[in-house]
Length: 349
Image (cartoon, rainbow, N blue to C red; front, side, top):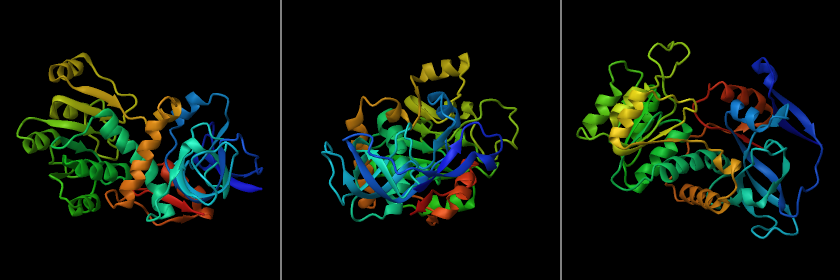
């Protein structure tokens, strides 16, 4: 028997949401599965709304989907891997198993080889944010050299990798910070960013600063971390200084791409008219798209491989906290879900 961490979908209090549960040592689901000894598992907030919509029948879902480990056994039809290979991957959305188990079965199409140079913790800690940064910049925004990119919350685990990826491609990067610590982290990055805007300082005008930095032309690509939709939103419910949607629309250039993480974004007719005049596109960043449609599995695995290669070459350097032991996973996951952690939390098994 092994333990795994699970999330109770209909729990009323956060204390009851996460629970450890013994799991039967299940047999392989198919000939294409490999048996993985998990070495590290990263924790990301659960999109409860999405999970509830996709898994209508379920009462609970497993926690911990970004895993790195060693293959102990391979199914008879597995072609990509062999025993003792070191791999990293993301468990599918409908996985029955928690990545916080010592051993689990995973389909070979969800894994790529882990380069020797990188640690288990780095591999697990960067795989999902790296994937999200790729989707945002390459897949949705068509990033290229010389483009100007604004990355909101540039010191978050996702933001840091998006900043590094943009710089590697040769873009001019502006990033926002939420406090002095974030600002210092961003200012130390090499090559230097074009500008770091500390939004905790009330005198910073985001739109004005971006237009100034781009000679009045506006920014080609904006990746937000959520936006404020209406002026009267209570500042207590939004402790992070998020931009207003009008600020973002104002600072966009002609033919620009706005990639948003705001799943309930509402655009009024005047907003749409401004975007129409600029020929701008709005894309939604949903890092589960590969799970919800497996039509482009090859592209998905190519991205995961590329993320690992860039980690190995030092192009991507994830924002990781100290690794957490398994017995602290439940408490740490509660903090992750409440958005109380700034760096990526990884459990080392």
